[in-house]
Amino acid sequence: MRTTRERGADVADVTDVTGVAGMTLASEYFQSYSVIGLLALVGVLFVAVAFGAGRLLRPVVPTPEKLLTYECGVDPVGEGWAHTQVRYYVYAFLYVIFAVDSIFLFPWATVFAAPGYGATTLVEMFIFLGFLAVGLLYAWKKGVLAWA
Image (cartoon, rainbow, N blue to C red):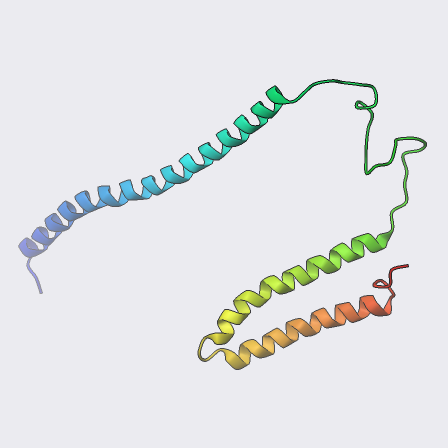
């Protein structure tokens, strides 16, 4: 067991070291945030300068045709209601599903290579791919993938 005097000396030593090291750690900590803040400021300034230069350099010649509402190459004539095929949304949804699948494959490949995780990871991946295959099979059976 140590005496109070020894403990007091240890506390004083720790305070001296912490005072100097604490300031160093704090300055390094805030320096890393200052770099992020500076990078964000440079990004905002870059965008502001680009938009400002575009506004100053572009020709401004307004005509009645240019002031019309324009959407997807269709002139705004008639009623504002248009029918949209649902299959476009289904294709987009299927794309998102397979994009998530491909994102999931990268960490799976790194974990699969680690020792001790091979069989478990392989089973998990086949379960995941099975769910995706069932969804794709369902979409195919419903005729969603047939372009008419």
